[in-house]
Image 1 (cartoon, one colour):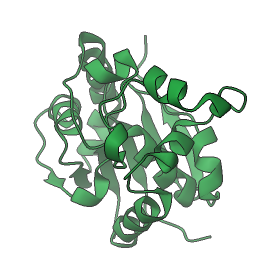
Image 2: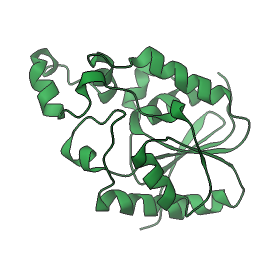
Image 3: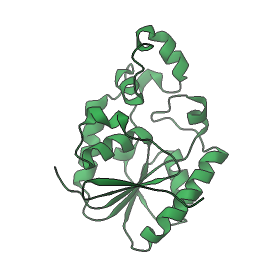
Image 4: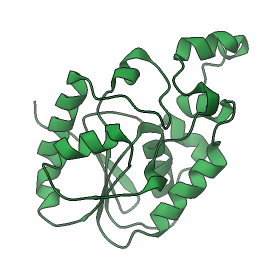
Length: 193
């Protein structure tokens, strides 16, 4: 298992489409009031880390940048297109119920979000998604803060933890927390209530 530098991963806060169970992929919707509050909680957790001047990378999609602007309290960052969420092809913008209704055989197996995106018509697919995440990880040279997306975070975290991508969908996918990855272990950091 490859050991990566320390990583602090922040999933963007809840968006209008997250709340409606609408697949976003590489489309965008703004943070809800709850999403803004989640980014503020992340700001409390990440503040001491930012004092150490880590590299900071953010997905160029609006919801991640909106989260970064709040959670990083104005710290400068760079964007990288390799941190964008998986592309869901023609399913982007569709409600999860619409997709499930069109796939009646899925009712019995309750697919994970990653499995749904893998099956998306005209989508990016897990192999290409995983390849760009690995390319990003290989470029890390020191402690890094990353603000990006839920499915990207699951795949990235699975690799850092030495798990198979098939297990990524079983990892937690929380908003409003910071996932600290260090020495092949994961710690979920939360702001005090």
